Each structure stands twice: as C-alpha cells, then as structure tokens.
Length: 269
Length: 269
DNA sequence: ATCGTGGACTGAAGCAGATCAGTCCGGATG
DNA sequence: CATCCGGACTGATCTGCTTCAGTCCACGAT
Image (cartoon, rainbow over all chains, first blue to last red):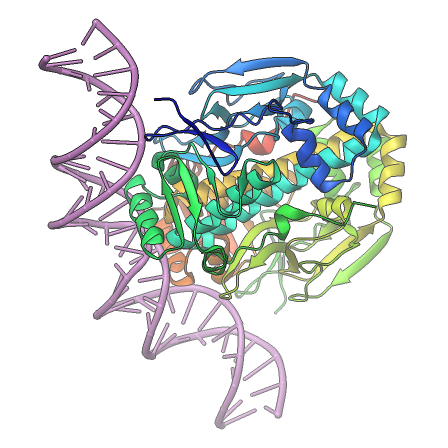
C-alpha cells in the first residue's frame, strides 16, 4: 500500500495522504536547502557552502501544533529549517488568527527575535519539523570567518521583509482570487528555489483553514475560490498537491512580479 | 489673520489650515527627533546624541508629491527625516495603490534600499519634507565609533518591521472601524515619541484618500468610519487634527497593544 | 468675477465575502 | 464495532464595504 512515486521530485504515497519530501540533504544531496537557497542569491564557494552546512549541528525535532516560539518569549534561539513547514502568526483578542508568513525548508527562523531578544509573534510547525538550532556566537563566528555569508543571510532577511510587504499589498488591494493566486505562485517560487517544486506544481501541506488565516478570508470562501481557480483551468490544489496548469494566466491574474523573490544579479559579483 | 496658537504643542493657524510643527530642532530643542526617538529605546549619553546629530549635515528639501525614491531605483541614499511626513507605497497593475508605511520626523528612511542597493517600493512626501542625506560610510563610521548607536538603529528598524506586521494583521483580521482606530492610535504613539503629539491628540496632514490607501478601504468608506468614530465619542479627525476623546475605548476597539512600539527596557542596560 | 480643483461628505444600489448550518468522507480511537 | 474528529465541500442568507453619482466648500489661477 505504501507506493513511492516520484512526482515533482517529491515522495507521494498514493490515496490522499501526502508525504512532503523532507528536503533534508539525504538522497545524494550535497548541501542543505539553506546553503542551496543562499547560493541562489550569492555565488558561494564550496568552502562557504560547507561552512554553512556546519551550522547544522544541533538538530532538533518539533511535532505538529506545538509552538516553537511564543509571543513575549525572550532569549529565544534561532533555527535553520531542514525539513517541514512552520508558520508565524498573531492572535487577536477575539480569537482571530492572522498568519504573517510561512517558513519552508532552507529558511532562517527567528533572526529578529534573537537580535532583539523578544518575539512578538508565535511560531508553530505545520508539519513535523527538523530544524538546526543556531547559537548566536556560532553564527557570528561563521560570519567573521566567511563575511560573504553575512551578506547572503542579510539578503535572505531582506527577501523575507519584501514578502511580508507583498503580503500586505495582497490583503489591502487584491481580491480573494488574485490574493490566492498570488500566494500559490509565491509558495511555488520559494519551493522551487530549494528544489521542492517546479513551475508545474509542488506538494503543499496547508489546510484550507491555514490558507484562510493567511489570506484574511473565511475557510468557506477559500474553498470556493480554489474551486473557481480550478474551473478556470489555472491551478488545482487538492490532496496536498498544487498543480499549476496555466502559469501565465495565474501571473496575470495575480499581478505577480517575481523579482522580489529572485534578487539575482546584484550581489553576485 | 495668521494667529499662532499652541495646541498639543503644535503651531496651528486658525481657520482650517494646519501647519504641522516641523519638528526640526529649532525652538530651543537640543536634539533632533531622530536622536530623541533612539534615546527612547536606548539610554544615550550626550556624546552619543551629538554623534547622531552630526549625521544631519547634508540637509535637503523635498516638495510634496515628487517621489524621493522610485521602484527599481538603485544606489539610493538613506535619509533621516527632520520634518514632514512621507509614505512608502506600491502600485498594482490596475492602478490600485497600497501604502505600506508612513515615515514621520525622526524616522530613518531607506536603510534597506541602501543595504540591498535596490528599492522595491516608491517613497513620496505627503508634506514638504526636510531630510538629511546619510552616506553609508558616515553611518558605518558613526557605528564603529559609538557601537551602541548601531544597536539603537537596528532596534528602530525592528520596530518598523513590527509595525508592518501589525499593519498586515489589521488588513487581514480587523474590520474597517477597528483598523482605523488602530492606525490612529499607532500614529499617535509614534508622534508622541518624537514630541509631536500627546495622548489627547496630534496634527495629521493625511487626506481621507491617503487613509483609504493605507487601510485597504475606499475613501468613501473611510469617511463614514471616521464619522462613526466621531459619533461614538472615540476620536475626531477633522481639519488636519486628530483629537482622541476616549483613549481606552479606542484601545479596546482596536485591540491595540502598544508594546510593539515601546521596546523599552530590554536594551537599556 | 469666473472657472477649475481637491477634499470632505452623502444617498442609493450592487456585490464580494462572511456567516450559518449543514453533508460527506477518511482516519484514528477505545 | 461504533464513535469521534478534522478537513473538504455546499446552499442560503446576511452584511460590510464598494461603486456610482453626485453636492458643497475653500482655495488658487485666470
């Protein structure tokens, strides 16, 4: 019953339950998704790559649904996500939740809470998560030994900020359909960067409720919007699998400008 | 006809037109709004304060409505706002505008575009603006001479990021009334920090159109919401003057948690 | 004096999305 | 085995906000 079929470079068990490829550098991968991602921003030598991979020493596992970081918590560690998805969110007094961002394999997590000692939001794993705890001192040491890495990490942080801004624009000025399309495109682009997806699709462990709390919609409406997108022949999101059928159509609909994710060139020197 | 009356520490010309106090350190002020703001985060010595003030050498003036920074522009300077208000915004393909943030006197502007060499948004003065151009080298020099200033600037940057996140939460999960209340409270808190307002009110040069593009609403609806807030006895925004009549009521309505603006304590050591 | 403009403000009508109240299905639990 | 639960999905109704099409007023330009 447990058939492994390669679809989009992912391991998928048939019959509705999806296993996301951990993205950890098993299976002949030489480097982690983290160094892979940074390598896309700044051309890194093998030495620099390895220096990054050395940060992955204290590997830890987090189960689904148990907060990794809590609002107001101080002296928090930083993490590099090796596998699994997490989300950062805020809860309002009336119980409403707004998801601010997702972190995917290869993403840095908590750089800000470490620099400023207090977290102003919660962080929760969506799936089982493997992450490497990074001590500030190790990080700083790595930076001073290989300064270009500091640039690369800052670069990644700036991309995160740009994503939050783009997310803000979505909530403020895009309607439900455009917003959903934009979000699915963004996820796809991010996953592609770490080798967990292609332009034709990717595995996605998000429920429609999570989607709703990200997009500022109700789950009911997310459901209808996904159906519309499907009926329009643009994209299908079913059984944990996002299949992009009409990339250009989606990009047009969402007014998607992927340059804010690329950042290629400027720092390659 | 040009009577100067002190209201909320501001210079106001009677009969409908308001002049915002420039906030520039005339009138017996010893330090700029910038050092004043940072001083609220990190206890600064007079020497450190003066080092900051010395950054204000190349003073420049920007007229209303002419972009200071354009999307895609590279090698941009950074600025410290001495007086006037500016806004950062993005324009979508269909012409819709989403304002991401406002910068007030004392705010740092373009730290990110300088670090990453390209701006992904537009910056436009709302009022006539006086700003000091800051060269990266001067900034770095100041940082190395007085390292605690670097901390303070980073601290301010982190606050800016927290504000964008809070803004995102507003658009996603607060209704028009809550959103508006939240925004007016945030502005008030920020202005108070640089001495341009009190808990009872402040001068505000924003039109209802600007408000609409900030809050993700139509200008028509902003008008109605402001009327409701006025009728509820919570806050009045008329003739460029925001008067807060029921601070607690507003805070309750908006679920406003001002800690994300304070940041006091943690780094005072 | 007249015109044009930008901003505040309003009523009426339309609609995008929320809310309510469900059904159905697959998997996990005792 | 029955039961419970979470997630996808649906129809009907309601409403918050938009859109449209204006008015009014202050101010500046001609």
